[in-house]
Length: 307
Image (tube, rainbow, N blue to C red; front, top):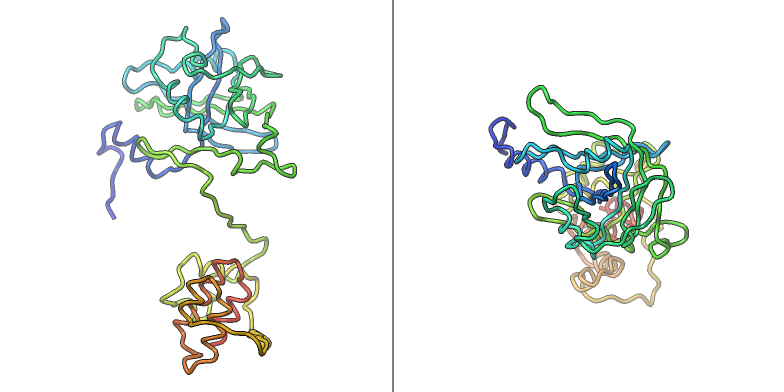
């Protein structure tokens, strides 16, 4: 692994290296106004949530490294103490990029990109009506970052005073991330689309941990680190249940490989247990791997303990 020190890089290269590792990042599509009421709209991926009571988010509008000029967003929020943040869905990406150009302060990027202004209920700046989710925010604090060594970054802590969520993205009273279809910013010109999702619920109890797994499981040549971790979620080490598995006399299955390829671990296990190689560790671990992938952790444990 290569070690790179920040001082060895140009500002541009250092910027891209940082963003390649802090990735993907949510995008704050920030609506602001100057004192005269001229609107500004600009995307920032130095953005995240930091508290929920009260709801606090932070953005990082930097002074331009190219020109040394302060960005309109930063100046507007410092001046008015208000802004909106709209989430960016996949269908908004290229219109959003239009707002990232270098425009004079009197140019309204809502118009440049063809976005509709959604009036706010508490703050003055509008949000993006095409966005499925937006927040009205008030400035808590603005922190300049390392100006003593020429730093150009800032952190603005913002309190969310109102949320707006489209009915179309709500399912059973909750926001559905697939319906939101948001995008995340990565390094260089790459984005990611959040419809490629999976679930990984955090355990609500102390886990046995990977170090407590039996050695033949912990050193498995088949199971990955993620799969071992799912086994290690349990609060106590399971024991072999003599009733598992149960097959009735009419149960039939094809070959081990066919059943496994079909995503049928029961069939593969049936074939294996009725063969001379019923205790083959590699085969048992392959069956357990499919069970883990299906979220059937207890059954995977029973297969692994059956060696």
